[in-house]
Image 1 (cartoon, rainbow, N blue to C red):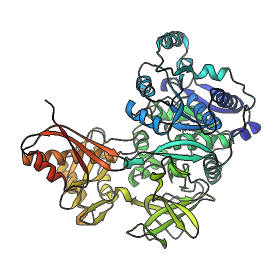
Image 2: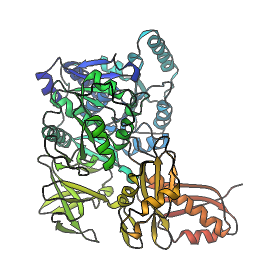
Image 3: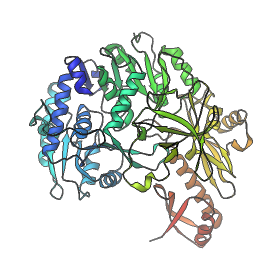
Image 4: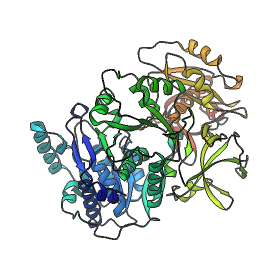
Length: 612
């Protein structure tokens, strides 16, 4: 797709990058021909290092131009595996082993980040790993400070120790030695696996999804066509979401490049970078940004930055996915900025985008829009045993399913793919796990996630019902309802909130506000808890397993107090096969009673002997 754009607009700007928000007027820029040559070099360099079609190249990188070279060069030569650089060393190690990574591309030792420290520790424990390619940021720092930084980087590389014979090379040096005019090997086929992505969303259980070149190219092509002229030559797209996520890669990467647009990559941390949100309207004015993609937390933050005095007339659209946007936030943002929000829906297993509100048609607030062209999307009836009972009629809530060339090939571990496929009219559909309805005009509406339903004594409660009841309170910025384990009801709803900056409200006041707006008594939250900041994933979604873990820990401690058991250590973790697991180190006469009490809960408990 990129090669086709090169033929049409070789000298058009393809990618601009600035390391710090205050330097956004002095970016490093690549034209389409320059970017295409860099990616070709990266692919050839990886093949020379022994990366074959079925070999995995993992990358643990922030948002850098080299990250794109790792992604697209890695996919051309083998399989690119995106790993979140915010993960712990142990988690990175486990993913490298699970994905059977052959080479790893990561950031060199750099002040202000611990990526190298974590990754080097992880790499030392991966027997199948053959080598590590490092990336530096010195080339993006100008002046004397840039020169000093590059000298220090060179000194750090000389001091760097290889682990158990791992080859340690500079990614840029290897790229420089490779040819740029063509691939030195046969290009991949449509059905070949192109990438691995960790998935699991807000439910916590991580899996590695296998995607093909066909799925990524089709999804990019279909999305681009649906959005009409959003990614045309001359348009500029801001990328602030992480490049280890499908939205960052495709919606603010491959899709714009397939149409000839200019991608502006803003700092290694994207929206999280120092000064990015505060300077966003200046950046939009300078580059004449036409569209950007974000999650509700990004829009909430941007709403607090004054627009007055900035010409943002070029900005036509803000894409919003990953999590539902509160209606009031949607309306306030559009009224304040004049920017149209296009709510969308997608998942890693569907390449990225599955539905979008039409840019030139009616946008229905709260809807995830219409399906993209040539991908089928439907609401399906699934009975209590998980058996398909046919398509659901208009307005009936059911399981959301998709079928099309964008659907992935399954997970790396086959057992994790069990139960995700639905057989309908001779076609294999992907069960997304989301609950939805479709209106008479074809618009889809999410009504909850099956995995996130709070089940109180057999009564299914949609968390959104509780969250919506508090989101219109002027003091509330974010809200998340989760199920607190209960030995009698199974779960009871509790509500966590994050207050808006400088806002004040008591838990009693908020609880009264919510209860007055919740239509069913069973959904009344048992309590409301105010946190300074709700836990979020790297792309800004509220991370509900973190909140569930807090509730489980609180339950265990309460039960221990009642039976007189002394807890010395307690940890809660999400395991792929067993779900939430509590590990407890306790002593005292009540320990046996505590074991019995915890057996009444749905989470798993493991006791570890206390060592003095």
